[in-house]
Length: 269
Image 1 (cartoon, rainbow, N blue to C red):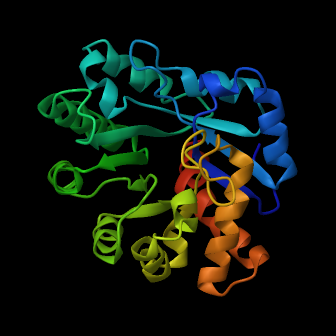
Image 2: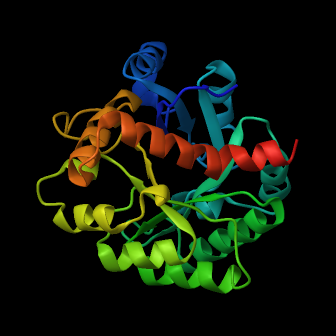
């Protein structure tokens, strides 16, 4: 059951990460104490065949939901057994989207052609399930956009460009594809002027917040382990940027989350 009153939402965190092994319960409690009433724990984990990393977190904590998917780093681990497993797990009542999936040409932990194949399979599955997608793209913007345009030529369910770090041009492309921008701690970094320009350009109803915890902690915690409670720091910076009160921003972003994730679940009940 989701909260009736607006809460901050961390739409992308990795609560299964080993860096939370010793204090995971406390991390979740600290988030709730900071007003973060809903967290989405990403289900990519260490890659196939284990696809339930996020679901395990969602079943453990009432305020945590999940995704299921194959990260581009783990594309070579995907097999034909992966796809029926994903299809089945996606029907779990606390799974809100597929991903994170996409392309990562920075590390190239999986060959680029394999990354593209696995990404396309998940875009196709998203259409089949009418489920939004969390997009990971690093040094692969053109190919990422091309894959989405080709697979979703007739329209797709949209989703989030996770940890969006582009400028106005990339923001316009992402918005034109029907996606929301997932804004995280990078928004608070001193040199992120292009990202802040994009965050100001984007319609308010196409923005969500995230942490990508334990990565990319915002100021004043940059360089330390990130956690869902810190979404409040990014929210504060976004409110300042857009000249809004914290309460007004929280209400607007809460409506975005409900529309993006929960309207679909309600319609399918």
